[in-house]
Length: 413
Image 1 (cartoon, rainbow, N blue to C red):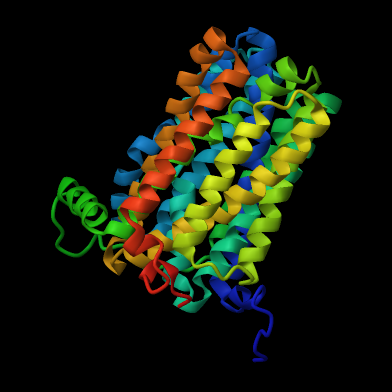
Image 2: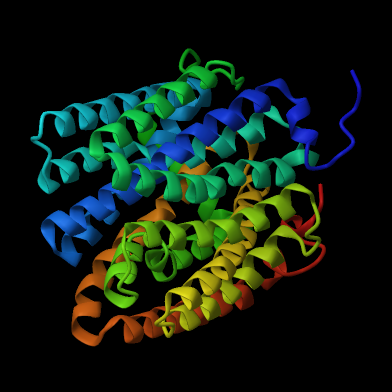
């Protein structure tokens, strides 16, 4: 077999990754189409920004259960659990299609179904990363994680534009029919993914003891705990402005329609896609720990600037830069945690990492009343300055394991 010369294509020399990448791509596209279509639907039908932030928060509510799903992944196997969850996504999408087709869909029903999907959705990233760590050589880890991230970033471009385009042109039913097909395709492709079998047949301690051991693993590994802290910080203080609040920004700040909302989402993801591609080609040599910290700070500076822009053109430009910064922060963050964790704890530690996503619904829920009280610009200022200060504290507190060039977090292999 001819060796793959390009670092960008090297992970595709592994058969499992050739199935996992398109499976993740189809899932990510469906996720993104759902979030934007239903976010716009809830905002228009209810006329309430609080309903919008509640919907956005529900998408990530399951992050609180992700450590337990990490335990389940270790016992059942990542591949098996991924097949189960992606089958459920397809069933929920089919239910939404049928409800829309019969004319009984309401914002309340959307919130109920979103709460079901939200229990599982945050753990999809955990399963993707754990499978990559299990099936690819260590030297390919950063590149493979970067390529995996492109499935999410490209989905925010294709899904944003295609999702709102389908909704505007054809309505809810055709849009959700497409989403259902995407989930079914993802399930079928996942059948070709490899992965270590679960340990459900071996003598094991209780699930709670497994979870306790995972907590200790994070707590007692400084680089893992530091990365976990950064993950929570960016989810609480930064992500609300580019995810849950984006429909509000489009409609209330820029005064634009759903197509322009898609353009805003796509601009963020275009920048993120560039960052993921750079990481996939191994062109960023800062080290994973340093990259995580530097670009977290850049991200907050850009969020501060984004809060002061009142034009659509300016928002598109800054969102592209925000996307680039977040990609160069979040993917190295995952690499820091995967390298720092012991092999037997991979799924559980990544489950703990997904727990940090709880910062996003919390940040969204806080932002709603704060925006009502002091306005969008003041809220973005408070969030960005607080996030920047806490990130600098993390960098100083764990500088030996996250900033030092010789630290494990910054090694190239």
